[in-house]
Image (cartoon, rainbow, N blue to C red; front, side, top):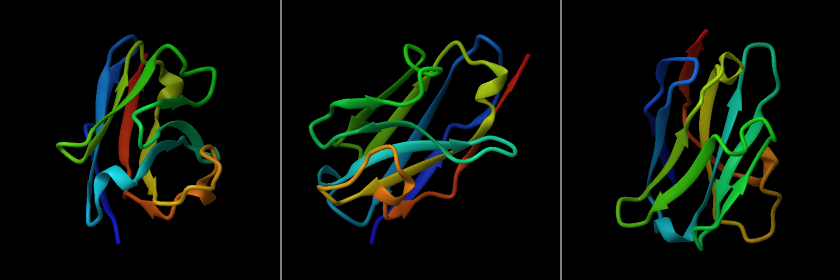
Length: 125
């Protein structure tokens, strides 16, 4: 089993920045691919970004490219999501997800078997 705990959410102003962290425990961290999803009010959960075991990042929606950066620190068993130039439409609950699979689709929720509880990000205009 893998336990995931998100942190770093909160309130930010438009144009501001936040860093989300996902701390993993329970399995060797370097065996995990970790992703971030978000779900805004009344919307479906959306893929934000993922990071491979190698450290290569995968971007999600065009609306976040260039503003969101994913990274991992294997020594700290943590994946970070740096978010800049935040917009009110970024307001959502952000979820960390992880998988030990090698054959899956990064952008689909079904690709991940472990999920955190989520952290709220609210961006005011």
